[in-house]
Amino acid sequence: MEKLCFMLIGCGRISKNHIAAAAANQDSCELVAVCDPVVELAEKKADDMQAAAGYRPRVYADYRKALEELSVDCCAIATESGYHAEIALNCIAHGKHVLIEKPMALSTADAEKILAGAEKKGVTVGVCHQNRFNAPIQQLHRALEDGRFGKLVNGTARILWNRTMPYYQQAPWRGTWAQDGGTLMNQCIHDIDLLQWSLGGEPDTIMAMTGNYLRDIEAEDFGSILIRFKNGAIGIVEGTACIYPKNLEETLSISGETGTAVIGGLAVNRVQTWNFAEPAAQDAEVEKLAGTDPKDVYGSGHNALYADYIDAVRTGRKPLVSGEEGMKGMKIILAAYKSQKTGLPVKFDGLSFSTLDMDSSDVKIG
Image 1 (tube, rainbow, N blue to C red):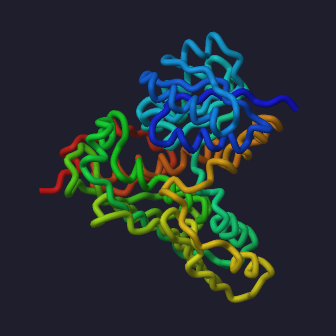
Image 2: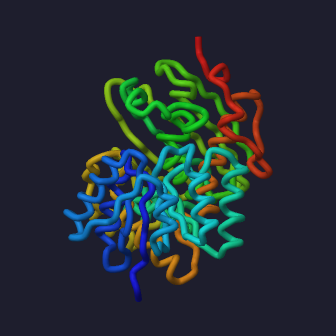
């Protein structure tokens, strides 16, 4: 089959993972363009692609010009979060498949527009929750599907990280309600996605307390969420950018009637606990998994995520992290923001909310 032609829009911090993923999947895709208003960043990524795959994509300051000039199948969107929806909708209007970095949008309305537009145009939406492809997470989900946990009771997502003021000052969009949100939306969304995926994927009611304690940003630097799922299980989120002096852990714990599993490490990549009432052949596979941390908190799942997304586009199936799936974690966080603002529990179904509905006074402590 012919290779799918990709265009990368946004050449900032996460773009190196997209370059590596395109290179790893060069038998099935070709990165034909890299785009960024800061042309020097795009030139650097074009050089990186040359080094990794032996060819150099074209460089554009404006992705819209690339859309007009090039034959592109898929657009990978890795800009500042606040531009994700606008760019995705424009690419979809041009009939392009889109692979969007998290979060797919900063409002429920924009996320719904992306899904509706994609359905109308017949294109595929994927969202970059690459940690779903971590080997320990895949084994966890297999155990869940096989019923090894019995009746699910609860799960916990703990994201205990450090983000200092230089991190926010380096890119002033970070920590703003207009372009980002706080630690829940930026740092914690991956683990929140894993939590909801593991506990049945159907949240019912969300309650939250968040606050801005130490970082001079508009949004929260600490957040705690309680999620009641429709199957009765309860999810707990503890997320912070205030851990001293450096990142501590990203951990997912799932507990049920006949099983308990804890996946931890720097980026939910190490099996720390694996206890089940009944043994299974799977257990031997889990014992063999490597326990080394990835180079950074982004993990190493983009390569597999790209492979799955490319296959989904080719076959017409939904990718593992479809637009509908990618919306769930984002929507839980928006419900948490609304709960913080109102002091009330929030229903997941029918939620209409945006980060723009928040104000710094909603989270400022002291």
